[in-house]
Length: 345
Ligand SMILES: C[S@@+](CC[C@H](N)C(=O)[O-])C[C@H]1O[C@@H](n2cnc3c(N)ncnc32)[C@H](O)[C@@H]1O
Image (cartoon, rainbow, N blue to C red; front, side, top):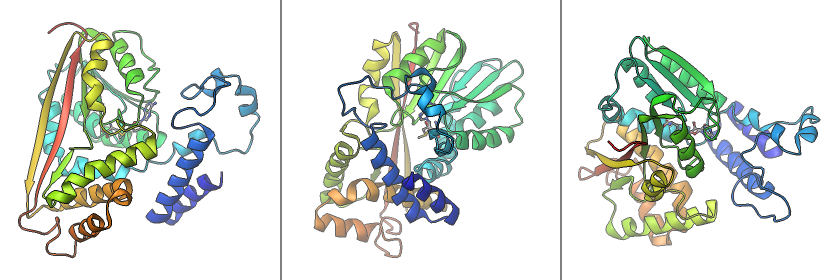
């Protein structure tokens, strides 16, 4: 409760540092309570990902008058929001080009799940015409508000719904959608449960398209070789420490098999690299800032002192030799999309 109160207070004070620390404390407490991470008890079933009303604890939960419930936390955009938004802004043209090449008649029905801030939903809303249907679904109330605003700007001719929904229990009959789009979300989800539900709601001749990244090679930069070699190892250690899962940050590696196991008869992967060279434009610089913060929060503590110094030097934007400002700086951002259809195509 205290950690959650601290999150609220940090949001109120608009203090990014305080917020990061408070969220980290919420995370640790949730792990200790068994709400996140692997189960540490063996005397009862795991009721995570069950609505409380469907568990034996519903009476107790309903009796909590003043408690801050899980749904309260969903009022706030998640920790990775700034990183995610900077990615969208820096690579908007290339990301929308991926959407634009999807076979999508005006009257298609599309599900964007989880839709997050509506970045992709907005483009679908622009593309669909009369007779089309777009559903943008997410569990986060804060994100749904953002998605609603983003989609409204599209002035779509299609019928648009923005709904609160759990990706594991989508409120649609089987075979509802021509296209199910899922971007950069498998890290936040149980991939198997999400893929199973996507398979259920897509039409037999429809398409599921999953955009994912592999954090071990999502963003390639002109690091010195020694640091470049050390970063993935540091990331792996951090992933094991934080998630008890070395594969958490690289969900694509198991995705083809997963899609096939859940019944998709046709599975294809396309890779979309995006290249940038110095001098970087402001959106790329903003993305780099967020990316370095992400690396710092995940991997920095696992680096050797020498590599930590190198990391500090190269990510200090006032240093003319940093990756922000060096004239030799290059960036390659690698994104993969898995296209899967229940039928062979
Ligand atoms: C990294 S964001 C990606 C959002 C969006 N697809 C994008 O690319 O911007 C992950 C999203 O998953 C949502 N999410 C996490 N667990 C969920 C669940 N069980 N059901 C629905 N959405 C969920 C979060 O609220 C968040 O919006």
